[in-house]
Image 1 (cartoon, rainbow, N blue to C red):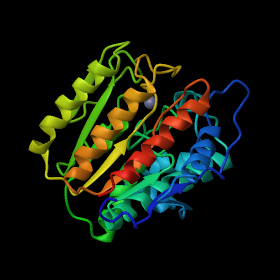
Image 2 (cartoon, helix red, strand yellow):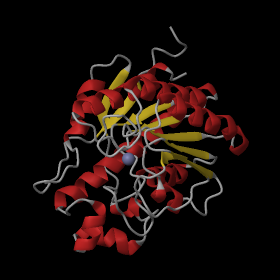
Image 3 (cartoon, rainbow, N blue to C red):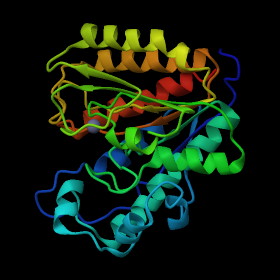
Length: 304
Ligand SMILES: [Zn+2]
């Protein structure tokens, strides 16, 4: 048994808050319930619902005009198209709950070492605008709120979603205490990038070995940016070979090894770890849910 194995890892869900999707919209809303159902079956993990953030919390990161528009449903059609979502009161409400999960996970990780949000990783949300299914930036808001609680220290954002984390790069562009790392498909969305501290372009159809070698190269250089006092892992399942948005060719075993190496690097240095799910658009979506639940399981297993 590992040290501290009697400690339960908390995983925060928001899947009860759903919103209407127009016909033909392929946002995988059911994924969040499917992941939660899987995680509930895992030993050593307790699933909870977190309190929602407030709109005032969102203002800690985002421009007031953007917050006003997503709060009151004032988005233009062009903005909705960029989001890939149609505004509804339910979508606005869900955003507060989803972000609350990441905030609660960050607070829990600082106490317990590891925690998860069964969602989050909304890394395409910039300070002044959202896009790509991301209305607000959950990691930026979580960091702002734990700083309000008194957190002082360096933060690592390790973004392994297949899409470049342009919103994280934007939100933390002027924050020397945050190191933003993004390992993403070279030819994938977003096509207009905001540079991170470390960006790695992964060629189309890169498989397990090539990807893991690139990841190792990133991890080997990260100590020079630390030491870190908290880490957010964006464990997108969209590098999977069966993902309809991915363009890479990682197997389930390869993704598991990705997570194992990332989690081991973080927890091996005793850095509090916040796992967020980020993207995952596989067909069938159940496989994506399996991959993402496994990420949470691995984080719980490596919690100390
Ligand atoms: Zn993605």
